[in-house]
Length: 374
Ligand SMILES: Cc1ncc(COP(=O)(O)O)c(C=O)c1O
Image (tube, rainbow, N blue to C red; front, side, top):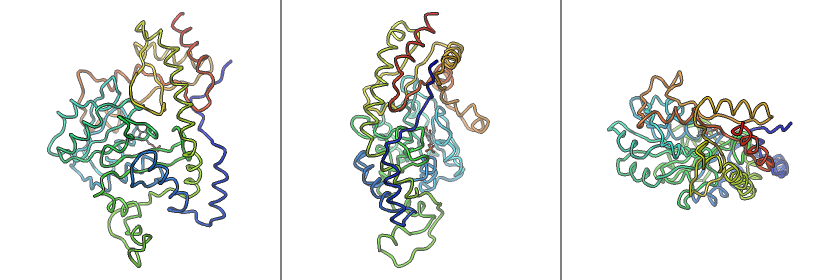
């Protein structure tokens, strides 16, 4: 029987060489040579000049909330269909979350709904780029600018993903990326904050350095550093940065391989799509093939397919339970679209295995075709 896991984290083979360089350099904490190398490489990939490596995307989002001075009573608009960190980071700052529904075509925030949901109390919008399908990012960024609202892009899944040739995470004031081992490239746990709004650079540097002006000290601008404001410890260790650097050097190879598997899924399953038996997204966006999902016509069919694949050794996954339905999320307002798409679409979705060098896409799609032929 086949045995296909949902994900196998990528390993380039060069990680240990770079980690050994850290050991012989005697600098293990942030920022060292590999932190700088990663930040430079990320600048080349994303086009953003001001980047800091963080311990996770979650911590990058928390840093964003702190630096934007989110306070009790400030409204922060977040999609309900997302990972918990997109919302939790702002709830930690006592924000009043407003959960917004998604556009079922893009699985991301719905522009028209967003436009009508902004109030005088809205301080920030969190735009989550799900599976690289996001649309109208430029319009959302423009809307936030016009209204004087901060735009934070949760680009956790988006390394090497573009909209209109501009990297996701570089449209708003701040972008947050994940290098968790579930992502295309990783360092176990890690992340990055992209600071696009220059006026936020200093504030973010202070919050990043435990609330001190250590960045100015490291740049030789001051003799000693001291406590300036609230902050925390967000920097990635050099060991993780060395691991990440090896991975960043393989980004093209990894993306190309994943895109091949993604296209194979699309090609093999197109006959079911044409018959209206399943659906899957199509986009012109140049994305990184992080997630491939299908939508079944009902929750029960989706669950049966999930069980059938499991019985045949294939580990598929469902994706996100809407946050407005969670125990914690229930206390916040949810603004739905024509219907609650966050809920209805999440019940139909099934994510298929996708990782570098996964050679069994044909076998997986064969099983899905068999399931529907039964
Ligand atoms: C949309 C989104 N935001 C945030 C995160 C959190 O990333 P990390 O695990 O790096 O904290 C994830 C993780 O999967 C995610 O998918």
